[in-house]
Amino acid sequence: MKEVRSNLLRFCIRRPLLFDRRRIRNIFLFMIFVSMIPLLQRAMTAIRVRKHSSMKRTHAISTPPTLSFEDPELAMRNLNRTMWTIADFKQNVDCELLTDPYLYHYDQKKTRQAENWTFVDENFVFVSESYVNGTQRTVCQDIKDNFAFLEYPLSPEELQFPLAFGLLVHSDATQPQNQFCIAVDANADRQFKEQMFLLGSCFSNIFVMITPAVTWCGFSVLQGVYSCVEYLAKLPDDWKYYQYLSGVDLPLKTNLEMVRIFKQLNGSFNSGIYDLEESRRQNGKPSPLPLWKSSLSATFSRESAHFMLKSRLVQQTYKYLRSTFCPDETFWTTIAGNPHLLQMPGGFNATLWKEKLTGVWDKKHRRRGEKLRFKKREFGPYQPETYYISRYQVWNNYNFRKLRAQCHGIFAQESCVYGVRDLTTLINRPELVAHKFYMEYQPAAYFCLYEKVRKRALDRNFKFDVSAYGELPGPKLLSGTPFEKVKFGSPAGYVYY
Image (cartoon, rainbow, N blue to C red; front, side, top):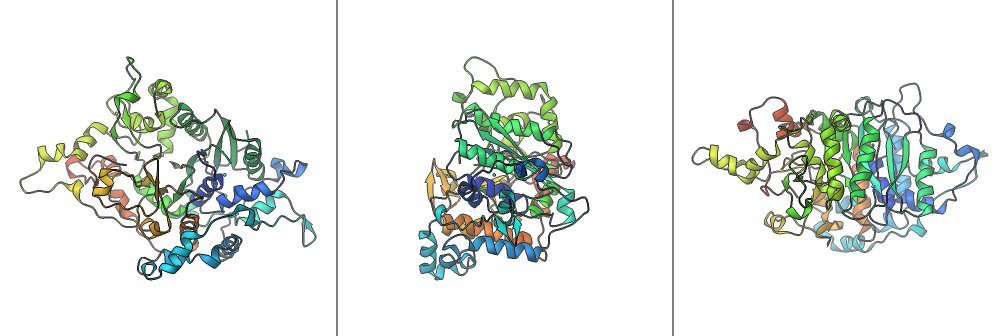
């Protein structure tokens, strides 16, 4: 295991689809949008994995001993250069128009042109020359230069508040102050594994592990993700908050925005709450804790992660879920939402929250004429509309249709795959990440959102206020605010997804 630094971030990666670059991109995006991940994977296929001495860890990129920070103007030029290497993208896709809610409606020709644009990896221009200006280059240098990696943090605030993100890589993955843990599916092909280990060779803040074969709704999904949480929690690095990313997610927030949002969360555990179907339980065997349904996408503090490792009840619950269906959708809220049995740092009372979200608590305690607070629907880029902010996902069900939540893309497994016409909605969402994007379906949506968020990260004059996240139930209750005075936002009522 490689030596780690105290100011780095980590990621665990899981990829249930083909376009792994997307996953990796997601990671880099979160970490200050260091590189073009989806392209990275594809381009790495074109580079032969050279096995020579220069690939040893002694050549890995490391944080310099002196405090230096990235030049935003230089980083912007590098980003623009990288975007232009995507064949026909800039020529056919007008991202500024597509992300402007007042303009894109009036130019249907350009909108359709963007919808019809396809990403062809064979056409991706990747410079991999042996010598540049008389200096021999390595594969690592090629990757760094072609994908606009940042060598330094963008600000002291981000350096002092490192984060941890988790992904799980299933098939065909920086920012310098962060660390990465990449969990690679054992079933992934040899070339993909080589690419992942190549990343570990090039960057000293990337750790690669092999996890058991990943199957949909199998225990291996939770196993891969939790293995990375365990690894991260044992690090001496002082990361502050953890966020899971799926291989088809894309961050809606810059690294600096996330840092400030997590500060507002103040150690609270953010996950969805819903009843677990009886079919997902072990027949005849009681669970160590009352089971709740949630999303695999959750946000929690370093203290919570450290507690998981030491808690016997958490380990018993983890083992119990081995024989259940879709345990990855059962774990987080189960261990965070039962305070009478398990005092998870930053946790919450899921039973009490359910009463609030279903309206039961309000009906018992409200005065005549007072409206249920969870019925309101108000949101903006930094104004959450619901208690659950880890992920924005649109489902093809009654609750989302009732909210008029639109999907201008297509549905896959009843979940929206965003398209070009969803961009104006996505840039206005307050959640941390958006799920989901497919590279085979309107990839311009992915690249435009990626470019938009990363450019915002490089704009040091961009002002934003995230104080509304501090008004969420989790941080308010942790601060000692009485339950009856806490505002619960959930326009869909009890359904978080």
